[in-house]
Image (cartoon, rainbow, N blue to C red):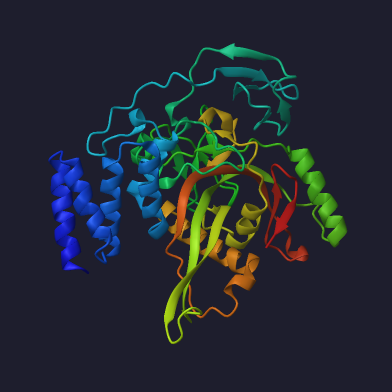
Length: 426
């Protein structure tokens, strides 16, 4: 660390706080020429960005910071403000959060009649299909009889703006989300019940009097006082495979693999998954001979850009089975979560916390890059992954039909995907 750089930085920051922009720039630019440490360089560049008058110059200093520290949160937020990805009115003070208000941009609720059994279900306007929990039918909302319902959706519907990221678009950025209210919203109280047979905890849809556990098949009466504070899901993938279709897919799979599935009973419910947007870069620093100066060495940094979307299980049950499902689930049809959209289905609560899932997803992303870009890693004894960052996250509910194979078929769980109809086993 350069002592002269530290002294120059102190003088530059003091001048900047006093409103002496010209004097501040003089000292801060001098810092960058005085062999500063990484932190000193970052502080100088951030201050120079704040002191710059043009947007192009501000952007240049912020990009200088991110070139050395891709995960620097302050630079990413300032850059998001410049590019319009974050509006000034969205930034909140984490020490003085506003009281939660009533959201006014929610789509209306529709009351839908199930054509198979006559049950009355609720759906958000714009949702194409709805699964009936009473008879297992999948209802085309547009074709079914529907009526506008005045009851407004619950505030548990979402944590953020409710706008789903565009496919292939740039991630909002975790550093940017932490500047918004979404990053500081506390866990919400949700109606949930723990199975006394196996300990699994489920989000219970409104107006459901009892719970039939899909794991151990125990039956419990739902008590409205059973609430737990937890992070509500962000999105839900509506079920597109009903019970009859799931059994048909299972039977077809059983015939192909010569496995008896006639006695398998399937329970449909939602399981939680963490969906991540991961970006940044992996770098490798090498010391080589300078081709222009004999006997001299130069340091060369090679960079491998990384941008992946990953989904990892948020429950510890059947890890191998759910890991395979996570990698093969299309999330294009996801809609903002609303408890009424469960349509009578249970939804298991997450057991794996966000921090633990993020570490796992980051490691998996690096592993995938090693496979996809094996030539870049070949011959490199070491590389730096500190530039790989979690840019965005969502808690997603995926519909599955779960059953148990008989002992004569090898036993073990069998699962039919509630969207694709694909069969999975451990």
